[in-house]
Amino acid sequence: MDLLQQLGAELVFWSPLTDPELPKDVCGMYFGGGFPEVFAQELAANRGAIASVKTTILTGMPTYAECGGLMYLCDKIIDFDGNSWTMVGAIPTAATMGSRLTLGYRHCVALQDSPLLQTNDTVWGHEFHRSASELPIQPLFQTQGFSTSPTPEGWRLPNLHASYIHLHFGTRPDIPARFLQHCGSWRDSRVLS
Image 1: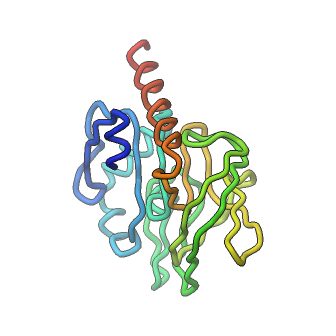
Image 2: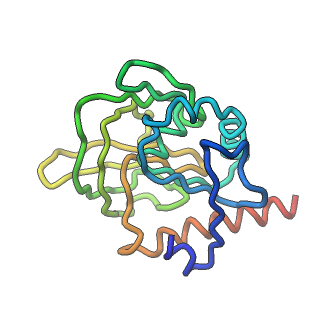
């Protein structure tokens, strides 16, 4: 957050649990990690926030979602008890909770452009989650851990970068700078139209 502010971003905080829609005049969305499965019922009940987020993504606003943020943007979350909770639906898959913990540092190679990366960019990040989801035909990354084989990972829409990988902005300040550039371009296109 500090790095985004140092690069000129004005951060506007809101809650998908309690706010009925996105704040006015934002030009980018960042959904960080967390544990949405713990709040799945409350998140699903806030239909206004869900509709606002989905509509905004579909209009092309640059969006970055990592881990719990990716789960919130899926069609649904299936909790540990097998209950299914409707989420945003920008990512056409379910995030299903399981007993297996995926944990570790990952070396990632971008397989396609996103609002944060360009094809073949390499980055480091980490994973920590107990959910899994189906991958798209064209995943965002090829990831590899210290003792794991290469694994496809992540979702990408023209304006969306969503992955279980928590990226390390501190080692690559060009990543948040690129995101902010996309946010500014989107804002400018809305002003001109």
